[in-house]
Amino acid sequence: NQKRLTACRSDISRHNAQFLALFESLIPANEEKVKQKQLLTLLEKLVGKQWPESRLYLYGSCANSFGFSKSDIDVCLAMDLQDVDKSELLLKLADILQSDNLQNVQALTRARVPIVKLMDPVTGISCDICVNNVLAVENTKLLRDYAEIDVRLRQLVFIVKHWAKSRGVNQTYQGTLSSYAYVLMCIHFLQQRRPAILPCLQGMEVTYFETVGNIECSYFDRVEKLRNFGSRNGESIAQLVWAFFQYWAYCHDYANDVISVRTGSTLSKRAKDWTRRVGNDRHLICIEDPFEVSHDLGRVVDKFSIRVLREEFERAAEIMLYDPNPCVTLFEPY
Ligand code: CTP
Ligand code: MG
Image 1 (tube, protein in one colour):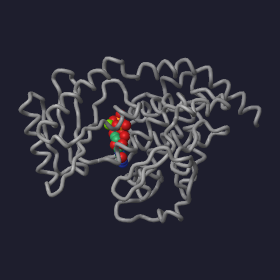
Image 2: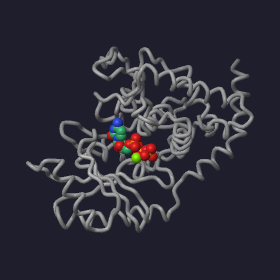
Image 3: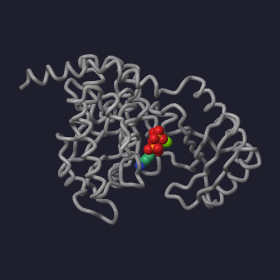
């Protein structure tokens, strides 16, 4: 059986070149990064005039190195609100941006995360600005640091995100998972390979430390020292894509386990008290946030969408094994 598996795995590697070419095609070109910086600089100028003490941070896929070409940017406005109401602040911000020729400016003050949306006609980039979502800035840095350690993380995430978007399973409002959740699933998966491809940065010496409210964000961030970490594992990207789907289709214990990038391992649902439905949180697939540990990124998944997800994982695993052209079939629209 082991022999067959090994044969199968090396067979899968013949698709490597195609997966790598796909990855390359999804990466944003350098000039896009330049345009993003240009827009950030403009926003800094406008916001700085009104609130000199404030700061702007990029977060999400434009800053965590898992962003596709042509994606929107996420910006966090960090400032001391004191007794200013957040909605009022967002409305004021929208006013300022509107009067500087930015387009489609909209303040969404009732959203779960209130934001101002806008489009910059000069660069063509759309942008969401939130206020004081500093934890997102911290987890963005953690994700980016993981990406520096082994290039296979970035390759795997791009392919998984592309698959999730093509198959319609990257929509939290429909009960499937956010891109952020998929990145955590990929990190966890690479921490679990033997030999491991990624370390557990939060389990190592602390070289970076920030507190956000009562949450401590601390971990080892000298990732340039870890560039050879995964070199004892020679698995190719095609093998990893297959094994990733195999893991989520057939190996993960949905009834009992929580995946935890923070501990580099799995935890039991019982230990986290994530065993039953509380309000709208059902915990049918459990993904612990690395910093906000009471937060389950899988809580949006309901009893219908968990089936959709698991069937998609199984479909993908089968395609990787049996389809002559997985790099096409995997991404066929649903
Ligand atoms: N985020 C979070 N908690 C969540 C969802 C998102 O903290 N439950 C933060 C993360 O910092 C994440 C950012 O919000 O990086 C943006 O989330 P998302 O849109 O899911 O990820 P992106 O990386 O921006 O992916 P996409 O390319 O699909 O926009
Ligand atoms: Mg985003």
